[in-house]
Image 1 (cartoon, rainbow, N blue to C red):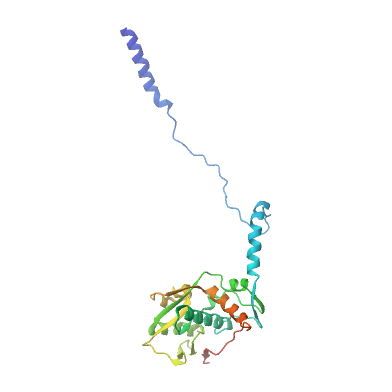
Image 2 (tube, rainbow, N blue to C red):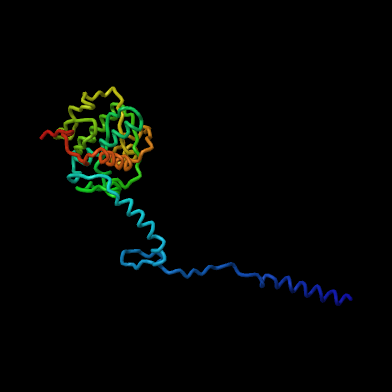
Length: 253
């Protein structure tokens, strides 16, 4: 009996000693991915028929919306350095729409050339034309800017000869503003002025960093929607879409 017990204990001990040899080794991943996983998609690549079948109805619907004619322009409305018809057109729309949205007069409207990504063509103006002009989802906001900040804005404007809605000024040869008139009255540095502007520019975009400390008042209106609605209103009233340079920036040579 003792011999049998000793034999059993010996077998159990042998099994315990041998157990570590039965454990699995630590998992070692062996990735077999190609060196380059990204594939550049170009127009030369054949379309997938299954994907095309899914996308086609949506593409057609978007095309129909973008092709809708909302107005007619006798001549193209262009932008250029300094005061331009397109900058005047959009700045005026921002000022007028902000006044309607907030139910109060707005002193100034600001739009830089950098935010205008395309010109409005002569002839039919479509929804797509407005998207090309203003592809961003920027909101129209209003700033309550104290006089010193407004002075900084005109300092900036005079350097690039930028026009503003609701104001005229003279740009001196060394890029300084002079004879600033807002609403037909001389600029008063002790006043606070209301400025209609996009949330991008209000946040310091296009180097308008002096606006950053001012908390904007929202309107809930996209800049693109304001332009679209204005053109539709002109058409409804039987008017063409027009804009011109009006001498908002006078230059001294």
